[in-house]
Length: 322
Image (cartoon, helix red, strand yellow):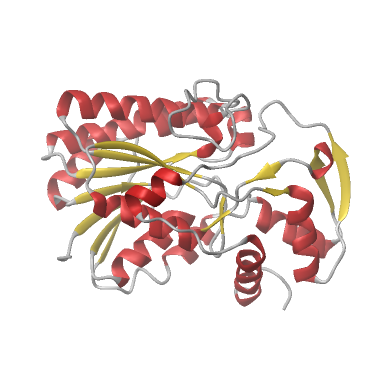
């Protein structure tokens, strides 16, 4: 495939930076944008960018999705062949405390991006969504055809709104859009507010972990490299409009997750059990039949392998004791 120019939003974030790295490695040009939101310490975003900034085919622009004029200017100037949209306010629990920003960033911000794209020649787009929008009433494993109209918190609700608006932009302006629904992405460069990072540090510090429902909640943990490969396949596929799950399709209960960390860290966790809050689904579980068929997607990293790689990276970065 010939060299492409790809705009990556959220390029200083966890998944955006790893996607950018993979695109550069295969010879693409990457225009990365990020607003350096301080939801978590900026030092981690600079870490994400450290292996990208020196590369001649990487251009970084500090910009905010909420600035519609900036989105139009950037897309008009750089004329990307494709847009990989990963910038978002994430985290279910944070959205319960700060709901309004999820509307302005995830819904209006995405609309600003799509509107700029349709005014600049309709480059194809892949939008990152979430498996948490299936809520608690969807049969497992979750199929893309499920209504997904009963989200449990503002974060997944904002992502579902983004998907619906994306269909409108495709229908009216023929914007080619693929939506990929991520399931519990983890691995090196993961966010410090996520379970693998927080729980690893808390176990070593002797702090008490809170397990909902006795650790019986299940999550479909999906390793970062598998997610990136699926996202790139979606970028290359050039669909008109599709929604595709990207998960591991192998849910792990939280107690097993903690036990795996205990083995890797050689330390027992202190645990307290509490009831599950209404924002948390009992299970996330992707049916990836469609991804296998359309993208030749095949996740290969299980939770034991993935957490081992994550802990090794944390120690290399001196985020955990060696």
